[in-house]
Each structure stands twice: as C-alpha cells, then as structure tokens.
Image (tube, rainbow, N blue to C red; front, side):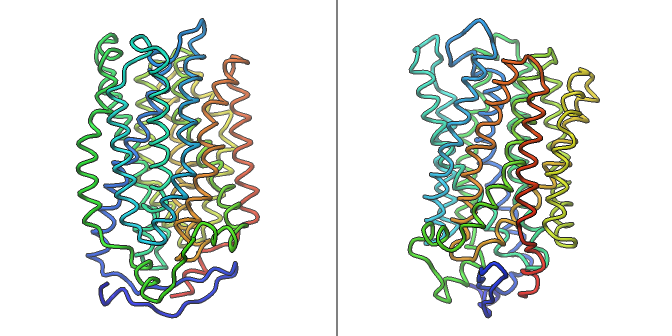
Length: 449
C-alpha cells in the first residue's frame, strides 16, 4: 500500500453504513487504474453481449428445433439468454465473497477467465442439425458459465475505480467504469455487423462463429491487463484498519436488507428496458421487415454516443445528486415507450436511429452513468462488493433476463408492439417508485472527506 492510501476516521451515513475512508490516490496511479479497469471490463462484456446479438439473429434457427413461426425459435434462444441471467446471482454471491474477503483484483481475473473460455467454446459448438438436442443443451451450459462470470464482474469492475476516486468526483469516475460495459457492446455489435456483410450462407455456416472465436485473444489480453492492476485504495485501507467480514454475503443481508431491495428496484428499468432496446428490438426489426444492418447500425451509433453521455450524467450526479439524474432516465423510459416503437415502425433509418438514441444515450445513459456510485454508496466497504452484486444481479434475472423473452412472447401473441411498450412502462415505474424511497447519497459521501 502506498503512502497515499492511508486510512482516516470512519463515519456513519444516514442509513447506518460506515466507510473506511482512503486518502486520494495520485493522478497517475488513478489514470492507470481507470484505463486498465475499463479495458478489462470492455473485453469481458464483449463476450457476454455476443449472445444477445446472436440470440436475436441466428441462434433460434441454428440451435433450436424449427417450427412454423420463426419467433418460436427466437423465443427459445432468448430463453437461453434468460438462463444466463439466472446464473448471475450465483456469480455475484461467489465472487462478491471472494472480492470482499480477499480483494477485488483476484475476483476479476477469475471472472474474465471463465467468461473467455465459455465464449470461445460457443464458437466451436455443433448446431441442432448436426447433433440434435445436444446443441441447445451445450449452448445453455456455456451460457450459464457466462452468467456466473458476469455476475461477479460488474461490482468488482466498478469498485476498482470508484474506491480509488476522490469522493467529490466519485460519480464521474464511477461512470467511467461503465465505458467498459458500453464499449463491450459496441465492439460485439460492430463485429457482428461486419460478419453479416458476408453472403448469407457463409454467415450462417461459419461467419457467426468468428466473433466468439476471437475471445481467445480477448481473454489473453484481458487477463494480462487485470493481473497488473493494484488493489482498490479504499479496500486496502479498510483491510489495513482491520475492517473485514468473514461472511460478507450474510452480513450484508443482515445489515442492509432495505438497501439490497432498493438496489434491485433501481436496476429494473435500467436493465430490463435496456435489453428490450438493444436485444428484442433486433428481433422486432426482423419481424416488421427492417434490414438487420439498419437496426445494428442504430444500436452501434446510439451506444457509441452513450459512451460520452454516461460520463456527462455521472459528472452531473456529482453536482446535483444521484437521484435527480437517475430519475431522468427512469421517467424517460416511461415517456418514450410508445414513441420508441412508433419510430421503429416508420422503417426510416434516421428515425430508427433517433429511437435508439433516445433509449440508449438519454434514458439508459442517465441510469447507467449514475448507478455505480449510487449503488456503491448504499453499502460500507467490507460488504460493498457483495451488496452491489446481490442488488444488481438478482434483479437482472427478472429484468434483463426475462424482458426480451416476455417481449417476444407478447409480440408472438399480439403481433403488435403496444404490449411491449406497456412492459417498458411497467419497468420504468418500478424504478421510479424505488427512487422515491432511496436516500440521496452524493452529499453524504462528499461530506466524509
């Protein structure tokens, strides 16, 4: 531990949380932590997001029995998507325990190793036409491993940066951690966009495998980058002061049950709404006859813009508070639900891209840019990884995991988008209500300098 990572007095927050406060990390070290954390995070989320794109475009046809309705195969592929989310709480518990007891860095090396291996193997799987039911069974098994890894990734990736950042700039620096999430999706969508330029037969036979097989290089680079990271300053300071938990998951459930539930509610609109916008919308575009390239381009452009807007939202949360900024995103999702599908229905590329910009850069950006600091500030250092993982990942099962499946089922039954718009509104309202019961955390943490 460097001389700048010294411990100062702990003080309680209004919710009873107690933080071991670390002194500031020097700017050079903080830049290195940010760059390495974002790079590792992007590589891991590249792997995880590949499945959502492939589920919308190819997995239904290649890995599941064909029926009379193409949406049935897509529903089966999205069911596999949901299975990955169901495994995320397990990863959150396991790696939250490792991260709170032994350190953030070691947990993140393991998550990337598991994710990289599972994603690479998906690229080698035989299809349903080749091995029958073994194809979807193996695909689902590897998706479970992806889910376990992703469940431990987010909290650790956030904490490596936020626990080394100055308290008065924590919102901004914590939002930088989300560049990895957005960057990973942009990278995965861009690679899929390129391989889709192949002739259709070549794409369906082998082209779709290329993004998954590239994971072997991503895994190697990512593990190297993460192995060079120092431990987070605040965790190191808390450990030096003797603040630790032998069973962090049990401790956080006992001490912070309300905060876990609130974190889950905050996650619903961000996660569930996002996967309707970036995953289900691709299937909806196919349903109404919009070319895949137009839809993918809209996703790529909007997510690229969001890489900048999420930083703007994070910085704004340092100035006006976490809750107002998060409310912009959650209430915005409610307001754009019907216009989003109206714009897609025009089949005009510019209007389709406008829909994605509203959904991603504005609504999702406001929530995801503020979420890391808001959730992290609900818990004290020695149980923070576990608390964030539980709130973030349990909610993801019901929000992000089920929303594309539910949306596709609604589309298959009603053959229209209005029920899906109502689903988006419901997701947004759950988060709005949760925000009303959440204490503002920005001022409390800044006052502990």
